[in-house]
Length: 190
Image (tube, rainbow, N blue to C red; front, side, top):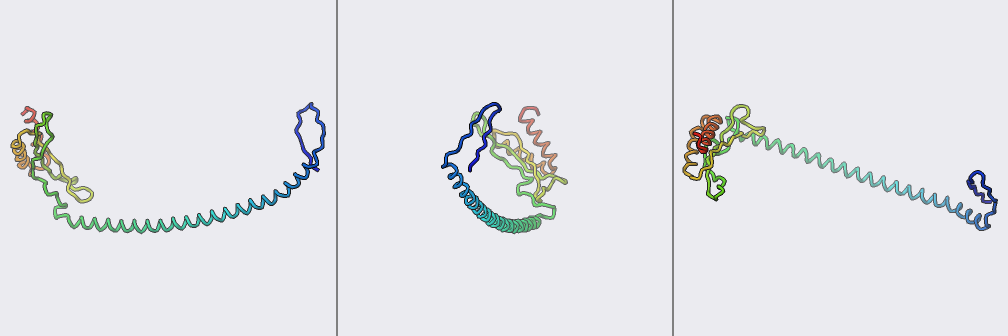
């Protein structure tokens, strides 16, 4: 017998009726099928959990292999970096570092053209820094570039380069003074 509970608001009358004879039979068929469906769901969930566990194990193994390869590469790169540092250290001369080739020699380079399109030239010189700032972290000589004013006449730029060459033995201070004096002559403040 199938009993149905119905919530009824207070004060209302409810008539008791009997269910049609087909409903109890259908309810009994459903109650028979429910345990079989629950068992099928449980089996499916167990299979899914097993598949997930296998996939996680494979992923963990792949990660472990990847980490081992990455660690080996890191060790190889570290060893290579050490060899490079040793090679750089052997290239350093007795003074402490190997200076670039054009340090202390003034040269004339093409400058930015004027608005009229007229070409310009400029003298420049690289001077090695002195003291504790003279060498960078990788053992290379640090340099400062001093430039003269832009000149429309190339011969004037060569004269500026000659002045820079004379001042190159005085270090950065002397080269800076020459550059400042050349800039003042360009602007007519000599």
